[in-house]
Image (tube, rainbow, N blue to C red; front, side):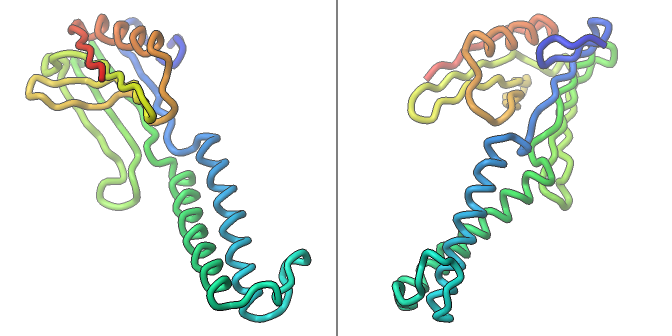
Length: 192
């Protein structure tokens, strides 16, 4: 098996594309920031309630419990809840998986990890002859998106790229053309 950028190619008949999920440095960074800020806000609100200093640099007499202490406690609790959610998704690596294209078995398998429960493993399987095209979607602006979709003959669009910062357009088009050539289908462009 040889590695070609983020593709694994085996005997020119199988391509496996690993997909990174929630275990990314930016998610870990925001989980740490949210945990630290939420804990601080909550403890400052608690300090204003019990009238004893928890942090040496903030005297509880500087804050009255109503309304500042209640708001600080509320925002701290909310941030802690968001932080727990972020750490939960990072621990379970939500969104990770792989795309496997197999010419030998004439199959395409797309696997992603979801939240625990009935749909923990999202497993999509298609035959190669059910694929109509590879679609490249490029959306510029404030929230840019550069994505590759696998389009079936019954008009189902399956995203193949991972959720992260938009990859450069040249890299996106190169990946799409390699995949389209491997599958023997055309490429459609959508720009907005």
